[in-house]
Length: 421
Image (cartoon, rainbow, N blue to C red; front, side, top):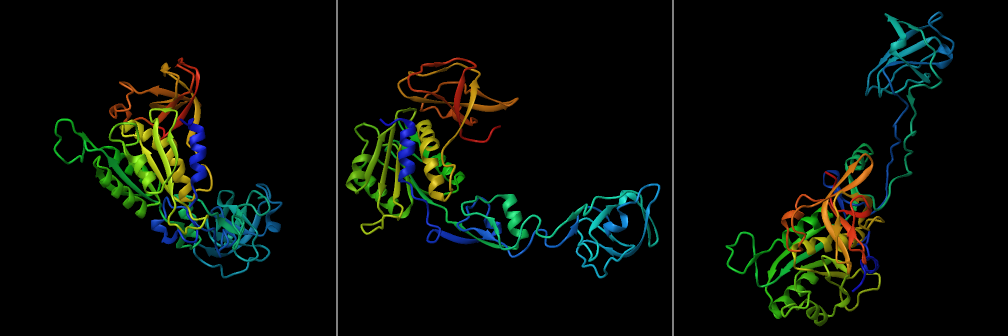
């Protein structure tokens, strides 16, 4: 059995990211949310596009107002009104000013904006009672971004702020990595679909749906291949089909040492290289990780197909995904870094127990309270077959190998698997 960290390191070493040239596509901005840039973006526009006002007020020459005060106001002539979206038509000369609104283009000749609160206007005559700073309230062209320089790097995940910038930069199409294709199948003759009548001894297949949700949340494309009974030939055909259609394959069940656990043998028959057969974690000890070359003539830099044989117990399958599959998916998808699970240090509000033989993951709720992460143990049984109390949790507390008890308040490592509630 490999320790968890060694297993993670090995898995990540097997992953080669999608190719930015061969595995990318152009999408419009409405389809870009959550996608990862496959090439750097530049714009031909400066930001701001031109000198503009940061406030409502008057565009003036600083030389005309630098010594004014309440006792000795500057007296200027207003020669133009400049609303937003309007190109100024006149040049501000000595003794002149232009009415200007926030975001409006600065007129030629003016270099400073005086806010309207320190002025008084009567017709075209303007009195200014407080001297501004030089170039005050002027946003200069290209102060935020200069045209032709890098705007966004390869590997950036696009969310609302990035899409807003792209729209403002008139980049209406962007090159992104395609979504990795992930085939998902559940093994076991005892399984039935959720919409089928449940007979004695049967189990409803929840793994396929949970894994599909996790795959989609990770930005990949789930391909559901259904339930495969414990028949070696049927299972072999299903796995062969999966590896022919996907970049990564997830199966659940069939990887332990039971009489009907055929997955490892079938993988070997199909030419897989098996790298991991078990990991020293609880829940989730049975874990098969294998790779398939795409074809016999694949170049060394062509990424292999990854196969994860997850445990059949529902909690074990999800814990295995969070701990080992999700980092692999992040790297495969084109993220340049940050593949590893998110661990934070906190304290538990309950005692946490383990047998000490394997690294144990115990589920519950993580909260940030006055700057400290607090872990609330989920109530009920912490069995790998009990899905019920896994719902509404967002974290896994880690009990290290060799430790049987973590007392209330002791520092612990906590893996965050969902947003804080």
